[in-house]
Amino acid sequence: MSIKFFKINKLVFLILILVLKSNIYSQIETEILNDSIVINKNNIPFFTNRPIILNADSNVNFKNKSTKKTNTLYFCTIDYLHDTISVNYKAVNKSNKYPVGQIDHNFMYDIYEYHRLERGIKNFYIVVGGYGKTFNQQIQSYTKRIKSHYADSLLNTALFVTFAWGTENDAYQYYNAVRKSKNGAADFAIFQHMLDEFMSDTTYFETHPKDLTIDILFSSMGNDLFRFYLEERKKQNIELVKTYDRIIFQGSVAPRNSLKKDKAFGELYKMTDTVDVYVNKRDALLSLSSFLEARGRLGNYGPVAVNKIPDYVNIIHLENILSIRDITGLGHDYILTNPIMQKEILVDIKKNIVSKSQTKQVKTE
Image 1: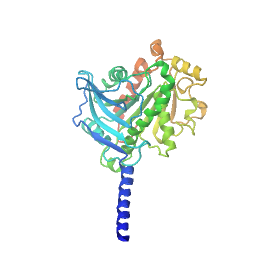
Image 2: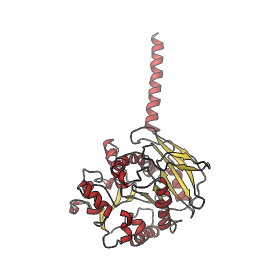
Image 3: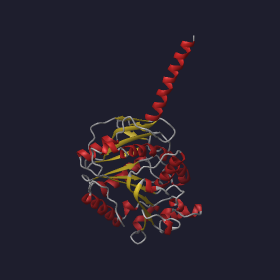
Image 4: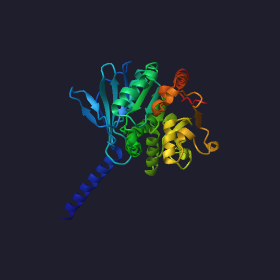
């Protein structure tokens, strides 16, 4: 009897070990859905946390209106010539907490080996837009404009990727969109963990070139998504990892004190080499938001105690280069509307391409 009891306990113990191991090492479950990815002048990659749907013509699409946390990311390409979407990778967070631990198959390595080793791409730019967009608007307008303004002219030298996250698209839903951006933040955590793990793999990069530039831009409410992401990551005691060369805040709805040491953006030096904060005091949308909440935003008033911000943070005022085009319809996606900014960004990217070496490049203002 005692022997049987011992055996049962041993079995239970082994099961517990397997469960614990699974929780630690397989929190993110990945799947390769298409192993014949091709990037050309007709398409551009994006990733989304929106629920997937199948159209009547059997073509893949994503839910046009969705603000839910799905614990899932799909990594896709859209072909504008044929108006079709290819779903290439899928990543699922099997926990309601932010992901930690080793990923069984992190397809960031596959993406790197295709774009860096096969195509020779060393410059990667991730764009996280704001609210007020359905999926169709994100893909057929926002991402398409990113492609035409930037990706087309840099087809063989840089890769642009947008995060088409599920957000509200009606103006009256602004405050609900703020709350729902926490859902987008939770799913963004999947992407960031995969990138963190890949960029931290010193053993892999002993035999593979790490001559990469990775920049990420947050526009409008995308800033709040990132702020909520960082706040929750800190609550869960997940250390930041140096993955980016540059983090850019444009049209930021984040509070003015966000760069203080004890606030969400206060330790970004652990995550990036440089932070650029674009400020426009004439931003009509941020002015309206500031009035309604009786507080200034980072994007229209700049940070508090500007004389105390760290050296790696650049404050860039836009007032003198903006035109009426840039604020039409209360918009503030200046990288898509202002030709001076577009030219400057393209020049900076081309500088990176020309001067790229085995060490990361840090731009000085």
